[in-house]
Length: 262
Image (cartoon, rainbow, N blue to C red; front, side, top):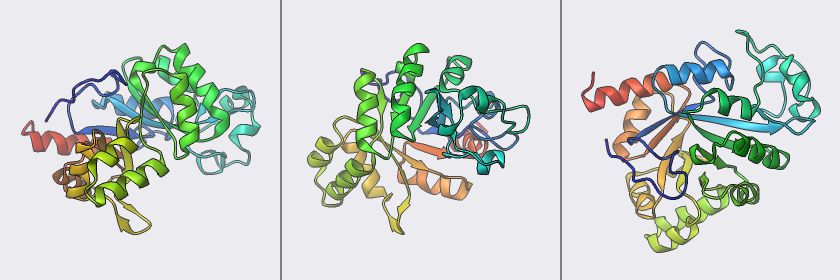
């Protein structure tokens, strides 16, 4: 597996062999998603990169949660933004886990690389503060579907790694579809990765050609959310640089088999 040359942006985040495995919300086979236990479970099997999401609590703390509300993960009414962090910590997610803060997770796992999806405008400032407080700028990637939100965080974290939001990626995809790699490179000039599903609205966006041309434009190509080994194998054969997956255990096993380690 190839080694990516570190750059001035996110030099700690992009260190390590390709392809990468990013544990989507940790490893939740025996733990609630997006909890310290889920992150520990992923790291314990050899994962180096954790994908996670943050919302802001009522008192302005960056809280790890994919959903804006508590219904799916906790089975109770309420929104993250309506509760204080202290109140969120009283919520039982099972296995002795509750909603952690971003800073708590960064401090608990000082060697882990965190891929952080900013889920609301309100969380940008608390997330930036948490990253700075944990001295973690060099080992995180910040992203958001909303480009303005992403840029606010990037500007407050000089040198941080980031991946393309929806609009710049759509432009870059159109450019590479036409074979216009220099245009794609300009559109992606402030990012180091694209993180996308294989298909968008039924249209396949990840092909051997788009992967090759996006990489020529200077970015890593990472695909979400890939949980079936056959899909992992097929995407790796297309040349993708990373798998964002709920089943990091299966992805690591597959990479070891492909490398001849097993």
